[in-house]
Amino acid sequence: MTATDFLDRRAGEEEAGPATWGWRGRVARWSGGAIKPRMGGAERAYVQDRAVIQKEFDGPKTIAFVNPKGGAAKTTGVLAAGYTFGTIRGGAVVAWDNNETRGTLGIRGARSAHTQTTKELLADLDRFDDVAQSRIGELGAYVRAQGDAHFDVLASDESANVTGQIHADDFKSVHQLLMRFYKVILVDTGNNMRAENWLAAAEAADLLVVTSTIREDTGYSGLWMLDALQDAGYQNLEYKTVTVLSDPSTTVDAKLAADLVDVYRHRTRSVYRVPYDPALVTGSVLPYGQLSRATQLSWLRACAGMASAL
Ligand SMILES: Nc1ncnc2c1ncn2[C@@H]1O[C@H](COP(=O)(O)OP(=O)(O)O)[C@@H](O)[C@H]1O
Ligand SMILES: [Mg+2]
Image (tube, rainbow, N blue to C red; front, top):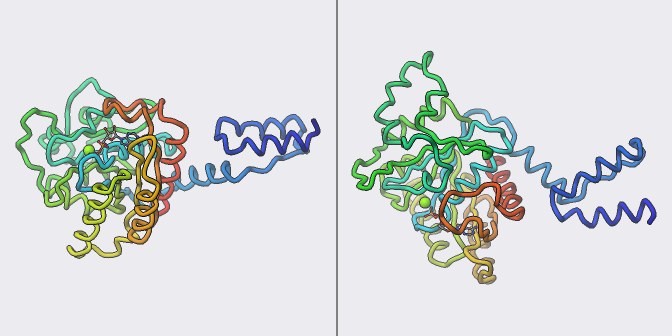
């Protein structure tokens, strides 16, 4: 096999993903730098997406994941984005469950030695009043570190009978605190657009991520929400919003998928598809390390789209 054959064959394997890309460096080393294989399209996109995700923002950024229908992959999306931003940026990322009732982010994120939630943080906010004295380490009593995924989860009230409402002012106080200690704040939301804390999150967000599965009811519900936000006076939604569409099963209706991509492309900045992943099905603690390569690369692309909008 000639050197050209070898290079051609390796270039053909480019699409196989990051694990196969080390060969370029090896060829460059073996040849003493005489041969420097160029990056293929997939590798170039991968490097660029990582760079966009790693960019330094001009302040803390808040991204709210929204769709007033349950099962629209909001919570799943927040965790997948937390994993992607956390690992690629190297921390300073928090995922906050802003459900008005008992949300599932705490159940689906890695457990912690404590079971504190937003409720206890709200009760103890005065601990953080003195800006000069309060430290990020003290937040460790309330958030749950996600290990190798390098982000923290702030769960919602987990008591069986959630009674206390989260008021707009409560949202603002917690948001202010999180903005002191994190660079990226991912907000999971509930299914009630009229809840004070839902509206406060939509207002505070630098970017909205409409999540939906490839289903008519869920897809339409996101569009209905965009209409309602527009009617309520939200400006420039098409610049402040990206869409992530998840496959709810191994096969999806191709016509419905194409229609949803098309309609959301008109209503939001960009649309990203993420595949069905068996690792996400159980609804239990998300095994970050077991996400398929296709899932990881799709979320890399989607998070780069989010970061470039910020
Ligand atoms: N890409 C995916 N592949 C497989 N299952 C998924 C995927 N995305 C979401 N799911 C499943 O859909 C269920 C509902 O999603 P969830 O994120 O809880 O929705 P929401 O927070 O909008 O109510 C989750 O339990 C998860 O098992
Ligand atoms: Mg949810």
